[in-house]
Image (cartoon, rainbow, N blue to C red; front, side, top):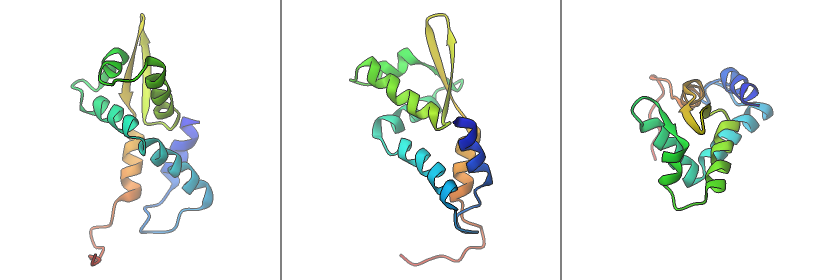
Length: 120
C-alpha cells in the first residue's frame, strides 16, 4: 500500500495548479488522517528530530504513557501511509522517516512564488 500511496502523491499536482481527482484525494486524505492524531504527530516529530534520523521503538514507547500495543498500532498506521519505515535489529525495531512522502506532501501544499496574497 505504501508504494501505491507514493504513486498517488507523486502524480498529484500542487493544489493550486489543478484539482485532485477522487483517487488522489482519497490517497492524500489517508496521510493527513494519520497525521491528524496527536500521538502519531508526536511520534513523527520524535523520529524527525532525532540526530541520525532513526529511533528505537524503546525510545518512542518511553516518551508516552500508553501501552506498547497502542504505540505499535500508531507506528503501524504511520508505516502503512508511507511516513515511516522500520528495520529490525536483534530484538529492537528502529524507525526512520520516508523523506519522499514528506517531500510529496510538501510539494502538494506549496504555493507558487508568484501566487497573489489572499486577504484573510
